[in-house]
Length: 183
Ligand SMILES: Cc1cc2nc3c(=O)[nH]c(=O)nc-3n(C[C@H](O)[C@H](O)[C@H](O)COP(=O)(O)O)c2cc1C
Image (cartoon, rainbow, N blue to C red; front, side, top):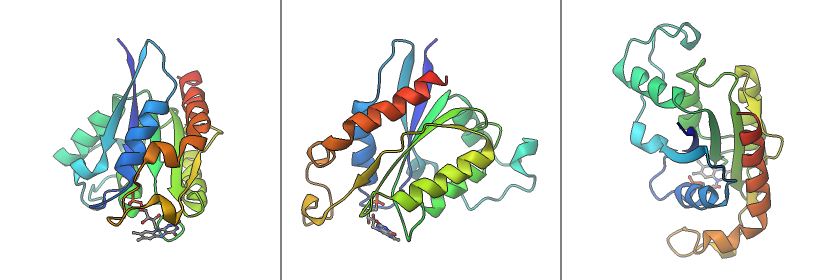
């Protein structure tokens, strides 16, 4: 059976640019015959603010939404997070989705791709700290996609994601390679 790697879209906003970036990033990832990538969209999960009575490390989940989220994340051998930067951090919804679980993430390889006016550098380094605490194997290469105003159309969408971020393609491939090496 192929190993599966999740590409997690960190933004849940209507009108987000993150979905397009994640879908493009997916096409740039390093390929191996025994590995397949799948997009996991937090927007589809609609997780409430963490409401489990027991700490996640005890793995005694009470609610169906947690059991389903746990089973979903458990199935992956590694993760690639695609995150925006909000007020110098990563989105609250992303932190919430991470905090629901523990053993499901622990010891697994992870890469962080961020975007923002400064490449989402703060978001990326904060997320790295979180993954360090959980005990994940973090890819050293953390692509930080710098947005500029001229990339956007009138609907605040990036007109051509591939063209705008082509210079990060190698970094994205490298980050995914580092995940594959740790599988
Ligand atoms: C609540 C909020 C806070 C933001 N703060 C930052 C920031 O600190 N740094 C930055 O580079 N961009 C910031 N932005 C701009 C985002 O990078 C931009 O809106 C981008 O489209 C967000 O990604 P998304 O569309 O995938 O949600 C912020 C946007 C929002 C909605």
